[in-house]
Length: 355
Image 1 (cartoon, helix red, strand yellow):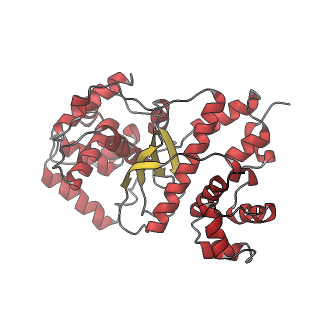
Image 2 (cartoon, rainbow, N blue to C red):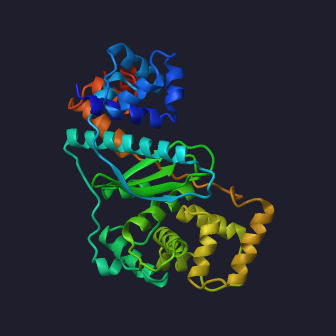
């Protein structure tokens, strides 16, 4: 039994639960002291089997969790969040949850012989971006390399999973956290808040893709970098050629009915559509500002009027591989339960095997 290894898993489970050591001690009814928890996590002491069982129950993990290897680190993290309401403790919890989910996906990929990683076969000089106009041609190149044409993307999350990026949706209430990108080990990761409206999910995920692939001059401010990543997201979601075709030529008025139709077509918010029209010179800055002032007065910035996008944006690779693994008997039901956090009965219902 590796003391350090088990200690790291205890710490990870505690951080994922958002608990302090004092909170954890209280949850296990003071079976051990805070000092003991600290020693477990540092690998100085090993908890007994009864204490491990109590910790597993308190931290809502299976006992097997503490014996699963974990040696990857999270690096190069770029956050996209709306405001500073999210605390350091909450960010730490988010990072630990993402790391745990990705490690389980990587283990599953290894079992199934389906390991993959993200690689963009485009010359690095084409990724050096100084101004927004350069993004338009880059997006065209990426779409061509990925063979997806210029039409609207059915599922952004599925597209990026197919390219080897590990996608994780995190259950975070409120709007303090939108998404992040980074590396776990050598693997490329994008995470997003699963509770956001679907049009915002799509834009957020592509914004994070921008952080991963674009290269900027060292003297470019973080504000300018964010603007360029946002333009990249809108350009990827609504390529210039098809946007001009659907939106039409330059104009001096906007129609909510027309914007609603474009929202459904592209799977993008009306706000993103209006800003995209401005970027491409199809409306003036004055008309853009008039639109945003109007929807702010109406209280529509967070929830736009009209029809909703009914696109589903959620990671599917993990559950797809899990279902296949159990069906092909490459993974036992017990292992599937440990990887997914479900009971064996839930696994049976999930797989839905024909008798």
